[in-house]
Amino acid sequence: MHRIMLREVIIDVPAARFEAVTTFWSEALAATPHPLPDEPFVGLRGAASLPHVATQDIGDDPTPRYHLDIETDDLEAEIARLEGLGATVRARYDEYAVLVDPVGLLFCLLPPVSEEFERRAKTVQS
Amino acid sequence: MHRIMLREVIIDVPAARFEAVTTFWSEALAATPHPLPDEPFVGLRGAASLPHVATQDIGDDPTPRYHLDIETDDLEAEIARLEGLGATVRARYDEYAVLVDPVGLLFCLLPPVSEEFERRAKTVQS
Image (cartoon, rainbow over all chains, first blue to last red; front, side, top):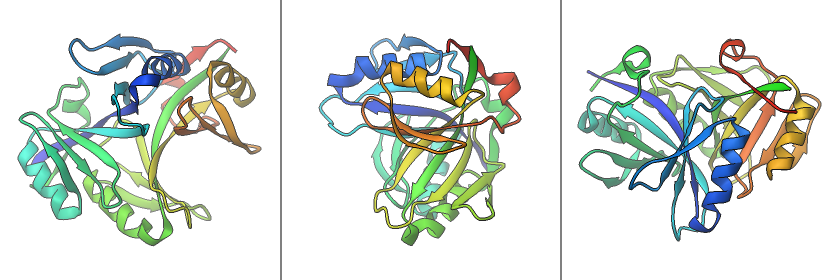
């Protein structure tokens, strides 16, 4: 058994529009943009939002999209469980994995870093 | 002044895949699917998630997507504010509105119905 929790909505934006769209969502959600050092992400701190929210610069990829970040305390077990349910792994890194659901919607699995995880995560069968 | 809060992630799925994808996300997030009467939505109750999560049957539309639901206690004022920031209204109904952000990402504005709104909403300038 391990635990999971959907933490965050990521707004993926092509490089040419990244700054403008980060400004839009920061103001839309009454948040303070907080660029992550050495990462293509800007966290929208203090957003008027139940999930965490960030924007991501997706470079030359021309297609904006939302994706979801799900925390898990057992990456291997959660990948195996979700593959069993019909997800597909698109990319696998040391610390995280990129998957799609049965109709191709993108989400990532990451280790728990949020303060909410201990309180809000649910246990699933490995 | 009025208040806003991003409440929910909606997983929009073409009719032909709706049941399978609703089952996938229910199991993925350890939730109980709860169909809304007379609506094309299934709420994923008790999901392991900071935001509320639901699936929506989008019928003949072939393109799966996520969209976001944002609650506001002043729909007119929030539409005007977001249009000023660069959003575009796609459809306007009595009780809610469908908008896109500057790069075309879909979100809806709705009246507050969540138990979290009083505690978690933030005030913005009308």
